[in-house]
Structures are given as C-alpha cells and as structure tokens.
Image (tube, rainbow, N blue to C red; front, side, top):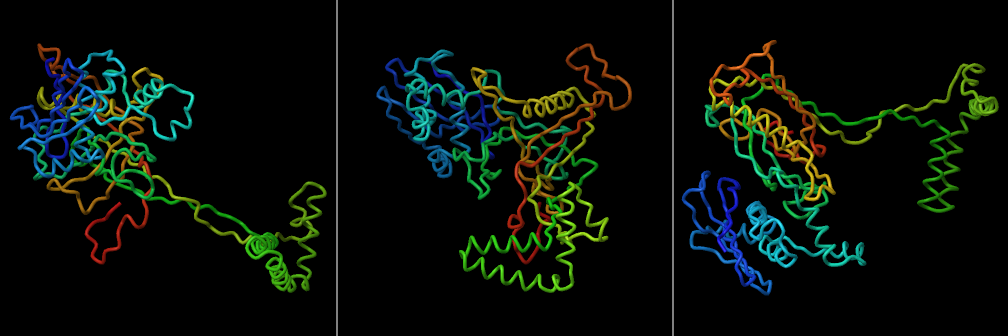
Length: 431
C-alpha cells in the first residue's frame, strides 16, 4: 500500500514528519524524517517496524544524530510523543480499522492497548476489547481537534534578537498524577520544559506588566481553657495516661494564679450562665469581660497566582491581518474544552507556558511563570469606538483596522520557596 504521510511537527529546533506504510501481509513500518518547516530536505532518522506477529523493532538511519537516537529510544521524550501522534494521525487503515489493525498501529506508535494492573483489578469482568476501547477513548480526541499549532508573531517584523517580547507556548496538558511523559516534580506536575510544545504565539511586551504573589493566612483564637484541654489531649495521645496526668498537673499550676484572683470562677459563671439562656454575651453584660482568645494570624495554605494581559493589535498589511486572525483563533481554540472520539469524555483544554524574552532569552529583570491555564479571553473588535474595516475587493482582506484582546491566566500550582534557589549571587527576579 502507498505510504500515508503525517503533518509536520516542530520539536525543539527541529521539524519532523512520519510516513506510515501498511503492508498486505499485516506488517507495518513508520519512518520519521527530519525536514525544514515546509517539509523540504527530508533526512531519514528512524524507522519502527511491526511484523505480522506483532514484534516491534526500531532502526536508525545514517542521518540520525546521537541526540535523536537517544530521544527516540525514550518513550517520554518530546520527539517520541510527536512521533506517536504522527503515526496515529495518518490512519493507514482508514477510519474503521479492525481490532488487529488497531493493535498493530498502536504498537508502531508505542501506545499500549492493554490495561494496567490497577485497571485489570477494577475491570476484571470486562473483556479485552472493552479494555482496549476504554484506553483508546481516554487517549483519543474527536476528529477536528487541533493537535498542533504553527508559530505565529505580531507584528510580522517583530525581531526576537533585537526586541523584548512575550511568548505564549501552547502545551499539551498532562494530569498531575500521570507519569506518561515529562520529568515529575515533587508536587506531581511535569516541568514545563518537559512538555510537548504544540506551538508558540509571540507578541510585544504589553504596556502594563505586573505580578502579585499571595499566601493565605487566617486569624484563629485559642482561649486558656481550650489550650489546657488541647495540652491534656495531646499528652494523652503521645504519652498515655501518665502524660495526661502530668499535663493536668502543669495546667493546674498555670490556672492556680487565675483561680486565686477569682478569674476562673468569673469566667465559668459567665460561660455557664450564657449556656443556660442561650446567650453568648452574659459575661460581657454581667462582668464586663470576655475570655482572652489569644487572637493570632496563622498560615492557612498556598494561593495560586493569576495574571492578566491586554494587547492592541492593529494589522498594517493583509498578511499581518491573517496573523492577527490566527492569534485570536489559536487562543480561543487552545482554551476550549476537548471531546473524546465518541464524545463520552470531556478533556482538559491546552495549557500555556509564558515567558518574557529579551534577545530571545528569558528576561532576568521580569518575573517568571509556572504552567498556566487560560481562564478568560476577550476580544474587542471596535477598540476605536466605531466599526471600521479595511476596504478591499477581496472579502478575505477586509480585516478590522484594530483588535483589542485581553487574557486572564491562572497558574496550575503554587510557587514554593525552594524554587527560587539559594544562590549567593542573584541573577534574576524569579517567580
């Protein structure tokens, strides 16, 4: 059969394309080529072959670099992830492959059709076909879902070498408990640099650049009687009855002074009097006092950071208008909810890596970002206060003269102290 060729995927600084050939004897081969952005100058890198018995082998062409060989041997590398998507996207058996053909295609792509041990325990009554179907449904997307994005810039003459800019990299979302790809952090999320970047949107630095770090603190109270009870309870759990007796003795000594002054009697009188009539203000009314509640502000947990950006995009040419259209479309589509092949499942939108760049390197004097979700995207098509388009005989060139977009992001996980590092010489602001 004639080979089916995938679209081109960018991985790091390289572009790859895979040709898949399904043979009449049941075997299949998938050859990956390194190309340029237009698919030109193809150099064979790696070939994965599945024979009619289901045995998979991988060989490397003379044009493969040592780094590429290492990457294609690692099932978690961005190169292997891009390769797997390319193999599956070619559909060499058409839209309705048999179970055997699906298995062969998944073997070539490096995607297992079998359930994990946990799944086997949870689905011990399910057939193998049901297990295969569940796994495929969890990994699949409904036809028409965008799985890669081109790199797009505004303005078209934006120079990464000479101008400061902000880059939004569209990422393939991976659940925090997944170990399928990427290096895992202690918190459970993959590091951004281990993600499969699907495309980049690069814009000038916005006019307003701010960040805000917050931590959740909450006021709490603990009066003398509550403290005494807590000490006795803690000692009982840790040291048994003897510990509890020692805690009672220590607490009694602390309370003896208050008892001599009559404060214990006054406090208890107000407390029980209030309980008797269902009022909490008896002590204030009768004695003009309340229990010292030892008010203190306590750490309550980390907080997630949010960021907002606003850009005004005024295309000057037809090509630049197309770029603006693409930018708006990409942001909207990437943040949209995904559907599985049969629409049984709803899947997480794409996420984003954001970075301020100067001379095409991370800007040391501006903040860094963790992986973010795009939670809001707004477009004002008439930022000049009235409806205006460019006049053209070609309907495809009647762009609005200006667009204003605003984006709201929220990081997927908190920022921790150790992520700033502890170097003696500070070289960047960090997060």
